[in-house]
Image (cartoon, rainbow, N blue to C red; front, side, top):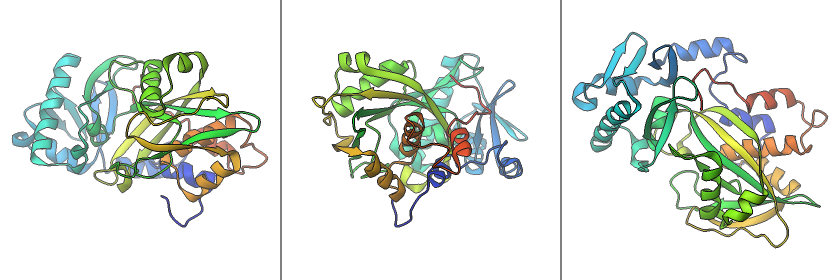
Length: 315
């Protein structure tokens, strides 16, 4: 995306929630799992590993003596989150130096948290490597909108960005680094991306739920195609008046437009939005009564697919 194709709402969901679901497509899910290896901790599956990743882990000269591979499972050594984080970093640093995986060229020096059991920190690992291990990652997305008539502030991503350059985005969006809270991240990203001040965000932004999906990455995501990326996005709405105009605070986006509902729908149909941002907008339209069971034939499937339950421990 984007392309000359016209995307239905279900097409947009299929693009992002693309890993077969055990409930919607159990046979396809079982077939897909037969090609993968489980990254595990005790009785908890943490993520799915593709064969090239398992092969790299099996090479102790490359990955170090930090891993045990037994049948269809892989475990990381270390009895504490700090030990596991350190061992993971040693492996990833070696891979980066050896240029083992292209996705690590996007190294961020920013850690994401992995949980096991639910709510308990298992380790913190370099953000760019998370899709190699198929672990759940987290972010915040906020839609800033003006009412009567409803219009949405839509930014255009910097064309120079290595991931989804030039595509449309949500008003504010960003990943949650290890040790950061949800609102804390929203305030930070709002200032950096839209020049929204803390007082405005804390006073006007409303937490309205979350969306979740299991993405098999496309080339436009950067790095190897087909890497596995289950994600949870904490979703926020912020109603703003005519005097509130977002402006780029860094080089993430190049500008904002205030688009009406029909204009946003058209850009969605053209595939202009970053894929997961399209899902957040569908959720917005559902919550605001713009997408309804009367005008969307796949309403139930869309609602369930953008709130996917994972087989992995979560925050």
